Image (tube, rainbow, N blue to C red):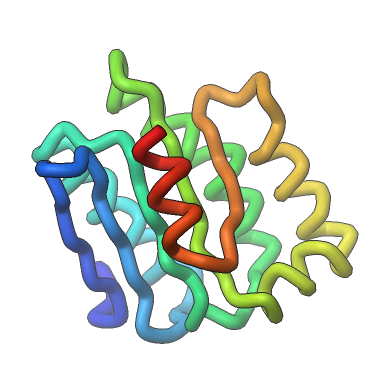
Length: 135
């Protein structure tokens, strides 16, 4: 069951699905949230995602490994032939943790690599994230 902390807003007019979390949640609930995100993306044919994680302040290595190594590749395969593009809107504090934590650096480097089945970028401001998604 997905958490009640997730708000999903499909924007078929822009070809974007916006996911916003109001707070953090345990890993199993966040994994259910991601499953709900993918189901809605498939339903509406939306392969460009804005993930607003500014209020999710806990960086769980287990979730980082799962999203970059398991979930995003699965989502990319299920959304073919459209390429999956993911703009992660994060807080400056979260970005600092990504940069300061060696484990998080590994997952981030893996997720940002050009040879992934998906494109992933991090943004502190929503405007540039949307611009990247729409480019």
